[in-house]
Image (tube, rainbow, N blue to C red; front, side, top):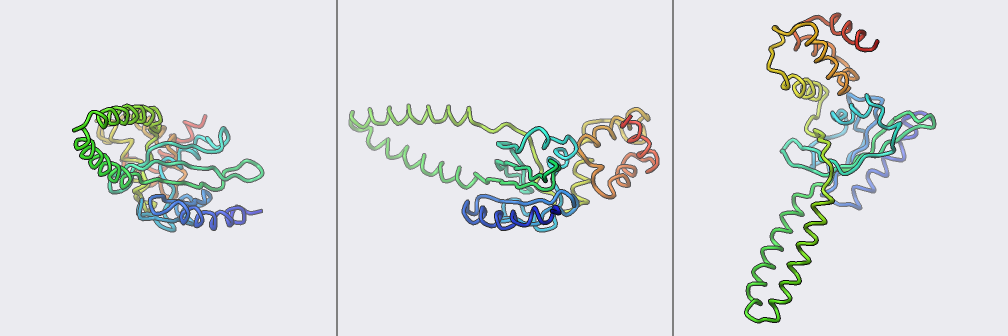
Length: 243
């Protein structure tokens, strides 16, 4: 079976999950064989603002580069960032062929911001109600029990907080994705490209390679331009790193 044939049933499954989970859950299906336009199905896209034809994310590229899919079947409970700056809780399932090659990603991004707003309103209301019932000793006891339960639940939530593996969901084009990853790396140094030594440029290229940026078409051209060097030099650095 081709990768497209394997992924075809997941398109319907994406629609099913999006409909069942509701508008606070974005469900995205990626075809990793076309990283520049990997999104082939998406439901509740308002969560991230992406659409059909959007590229892989920075985290997805790193998964490909590190071959994480060979060690596990999915990752979950990590934080992604949307274009509006909202944090969403995310999970990604690795879709593989019979040879264990990665061909697709099924991602779920939960926008809990509205739920948290609702919880704040409920907490405010319950606080006002508790103040009223505190007029009698019996309700004081009830309130104490509720507070103890609330504190216990808060501790449970704190322990269950997702580990942070930040993923940027704001890029909707290949150019944006490439530029974003390059910026993430260059911002970590105070040295201007014109003043960088060859070794410093090799280190930059190595970092970009770890992030999987060179899996994207046209990335060598942009990296060469940003580092004020030639494409041939970037290819030479990559060959040097592969030894």
